[in-house]
Length: 414
Image (cartoon, rainbow, N blue to C red; front, top):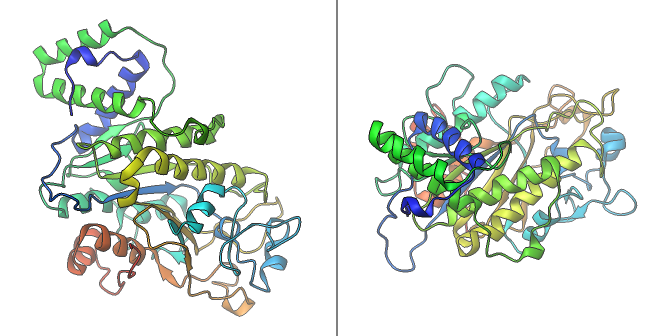
């Protein structure tokens, strides 16, 4: 709901963020929208896509502690099923990184799942091209006018097609395109101002450019919703500091917008920093910190979505994996297959889905990488089919072009 101007007292920082969001929205559209009519008790599905930029080491995020070759190959980055290097147990064969405490709790509650040995159709190791394929949904890199999540919006019924959110100062490619999406950026950067500045800016645009004024008002309303104090348990909301706290705040604000009755139902976020060539670390280090941030984001989504969590799926994906062997700078280089992490009350969770290829030398991709046995497009197709009822034809021709040979993964949603 768009509130009247007297209710939009907001900081200068928020005004600048809203203007930044409006800049992103100029590409994608803007605003809150009327909630679609639906029968009482009907599902109101939500999908959140979290892009983990830099290529996540899936063998450390979800270590295959039951594979007899894992420990020797992954060296001082490897985890174990027990002892000093123990990870968080999942199913006896796979475990979760010690930073993924909330994710493991959700897994035990059957609200989280993993798809392992997964990759896009891209087989080279360029971050730029890999992220292009991941977000565009096209079979190979190249210029594109839209991302696959934006094309999903265009394929949905009119009542839902304008209900999306891109988080960040610049909307991720995955959400950009002709279908409109609201832009919002998490806190940061500029000092406070009183409500008079907001009032004057709104009045200026109302007279000089009414359509832009309406969009700015909508962006400010979204900022207000995203920044309001949550009704969740304060004890469940620790403050981490640094990058971890920024990841939590981004998810928290997005969740509040997604929870609003007239808010978006599809969202995209992007987190950087997963390119661990050096000093990757095991239970401590660069990857541990980034996974702690992702875990905090999962927890914030669960807390701030409230009752809407029951209809939500959050999927965290990355452009490719990393090498099985550790390099000379205690990190890992660009690889192929990795793990996708899924969370949400709508999931049929509590499982690791994997056609495990083993880590035997003859089974490694090009002698160095985890071999991909699942296509990420199949995972995403399955979620879109289960959550929004999209047909196989639409998924294979519109959302993920030229992918008829990739079947949707079945029964991901309960």
